Image (cartoon, rainbow, N blue to C red; front, side, top):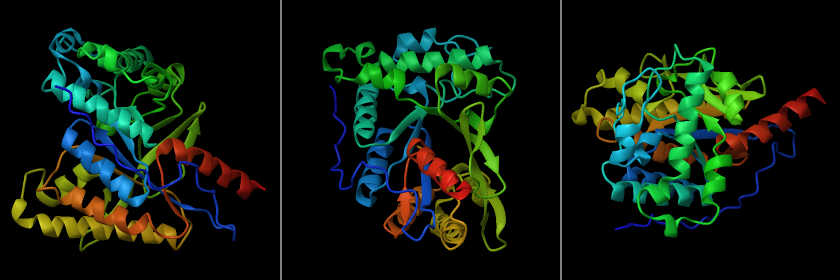
Length: 326
């Protein structure tokens, strides 16, 4: 049975905010993104956080979570055996049905649905053709998702156009790239890539027409040592990648404090966009998702702050560049 995703009310305008305040200081952009985008409970939770705080998020979707058993057996990633995926596949067709309802609901709410390819493989040695293969497999899996789980008659009007034309960005699994990536992204029509790591918050590079964003290193913990602004990296820093529920509140507070400090440095300073990444996995008893909720609830309501998706950020960043040149 299809369990339709909860549709949250949208209490904010879908019109993009102005790029700058009347005094000429740029808006502080905050971009929150999620890799994998599979657990349906976390789809619901993330959409509720966004709705409550007037935010738009970016979901980098792994396409194996749209595949039924037959598709899973047939799928073959570049240089991989058939049926292999480093992150597994959908648990059931009902699981896929709920997920695609969540994807469509999030799309209608103004979030970015972007690509995390399919099998979560390390592409550091991939050619442009290898990347293109993964991108097309992901596009087809999304396009055909409703009919592949017996819901062709339930497919929303506009789904095929969305799946074909509205997936505009990509983040590489493991943040691992190759020289073939940008040419393949350009060929498939992507507008942005979010696979880089930067020394701190940074404006994107524009390479061959592709906006290339990077997750920043941010100071964290008592010694303020830099760490990539992503939940998994914090998980490894805090507990060596092993669950430690006993200290979850400490990890939550450290994460929240690191996010707030990174935000405040930009908000009170140059207002470079702040990017933070998460997974659809609740590590250390959900410490990082609780920190995310606290952070979004605090900063997205502030004056001159826009919590936006990557595709929404691009025209605002472009307008900022033009105003600075002028």
